[in-house]
Image (cartoon, rainbow, N blue to C red; front, side, top):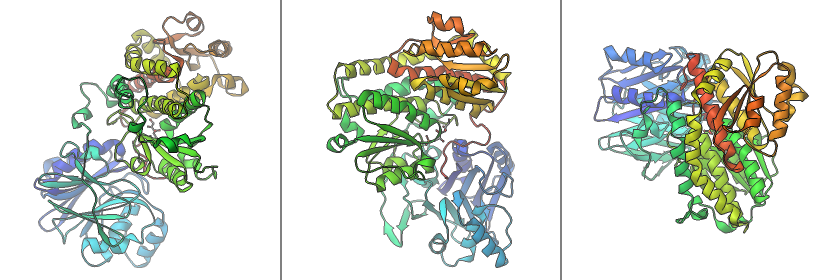
Length: 607
Ligand code: F6R
């Protein structure tokens, strides 16, 4: 959701804040702002729209000062206007606040402040925090302590006060905050990507923490007591966060998949690469052996990875596996207990709904695991056993390499469960061999066929609707392909199991209707081809993802997006690539903002 940064240090704050916001912009980009502690006043700049508008404002006469806060917004309360952009200030302009999250008691607090005659200048819940802090008394820390109990909901807040020109105060309940510890500066941020290029030493704040941050030190309190939080050293490489010569982050990240997959596979194998190394997974062998059922919880693209995971785990281990949306799990009263392994699958490790589902599992005594792309994130710290997908930072809002590495992690998890249950045999070594060869297959899939992509792109770019069809564990890949197209090209696309077409959706078909299908060699391919004949008979045009040499598919499909032949278990991973490239090309063809699609944000930290 929103990106937050706070700076206190040796240097001018504005360039550091703008640079940090540029790196955070993928978390929200409908307005932006900053506040800098001047000699006597807090100077606030805000602009609706992309960060470039704020940069332009700051360019001519940047506010001078070495303490400040900045924000890039994904609107919750109030339209994305200048007035609703952050920082928000109190009535006297003494305190400035940036905020990520939602105050659930917004309406009550707003009414209370209006009844007290406080003039409100915005529709935001954030302004209410600034006004409450302004009306409290004492130091900024004391004011935060006094106001904290009045705030209901999920929030991460960074505040500065004119009366304490060398201090930034940060507090959280829910969305993440980290304090970066530099040599002559401290940077508070909602995400390590904002500060990684300045320091790799970070302190993760816990829920309820209030951090009083000065240039050389940070004092953290929780529930009225001073607490020590460890300084951790990040192993991410800041250099991997530029576009590296590609036109968009999404395209760069698609091309990074062979490496990301290679690294994820290697991270969890033993030295001679013949078995999964359970120790590295962090699983307690005995505890894992007690597991009788598996619940996979996630949202969006990560949920699609879970659907594939269910096929893999059930097929390879026989353990009944359920998949839930994070936002539904806790409201359906799931049958969960100590014999269940609950795995929160989340790229960011910060998705509020997934975290809430994990929390439920933990409270019920389940063994709690996570598959996650961010070491140190909330899901990482909550879980008892963790698998880190080695995708590295993903900046494009539409997930690509984080998804395919999640699929790899699912295969590794299934192998780990086989090992613990004494099921390992020659199958396992063969799967591992295939996994080690997978990066090459991904490279070949990325190469594709220029002509086929051009034709398919044209067809979709001129359409308003499309259907994506798959069967078995390729049906979730159809869902993912449709989601990618929706997200970045704004074209309506739905994923369906191919066999379901005649139970309703076939009524949609007219002459030229595009059908995209995931059709590698499987035992059900003939049935899928039958389904495709039915749609073609009704005028649909078929784009198929299939092996270059698949003559039977070529006979039925109008366009084939080629992939190399791979083992059935790995087909979901390889067939994803053409669908990513297709969505990307369609968005580019339509002239859309591929990396920052409208209305979206990378990390969804509110319910
Ligand atoms: C789509 C996408 C989202 C996320 C979802 C959950 O491309 O990335 O659907 O998968 O918002 O996010 P994580 O995986 O961070 O929990």
